[in-house]
Amino acid sequence: SGILHILFNMLWLWYLGKLMEPRLKFVRFLIFIILVAVISNTFQYLMGGPYFLGFSGIITGMIGYIFIRQKAAPWEGYNVPNAIFYFIGIFIFAMMFLQIGSFLFQIFKPKVGFTPGIANTAHIVGALAGMLLAKIPFFSWRSGE
Image 1 (cartoon, one colour):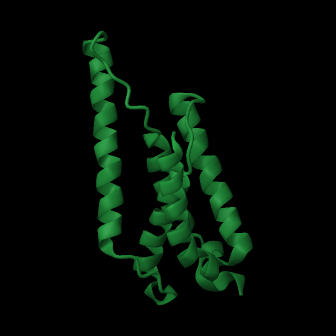
Image 2 (cartoon, rainbow, N blue to C red):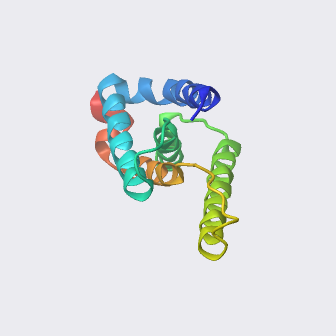
């Protein structure tokens, strides 16, 4: 956690929220955020305990949602460049491999181990939750009108 972490999360929220909120309208957008927050943070808590902070699980949920909606319903107008999906995907997988390396060090060389302190479970589960919610008609563009 840190001010830059929160700042970047809020910049992503602003960018992605400008795309999602007008299409979902406020109430469905809020429900989406709450659902992804509860799901991603619960899994992170179960995997790593209570010491994590951030909005990253929700951000990856929003990216997962837009990724699916962009493919399934291009008429909704989510025009996010593929480079953003690649960037986030590479980042998440890099952090996952860093955590796997940390885990292996803790098992085989406990005195050399390091802890990256990254809530990657929240990232991955958030993305999966967003992708799943994108398949539910309640969260499509026209369902609230």
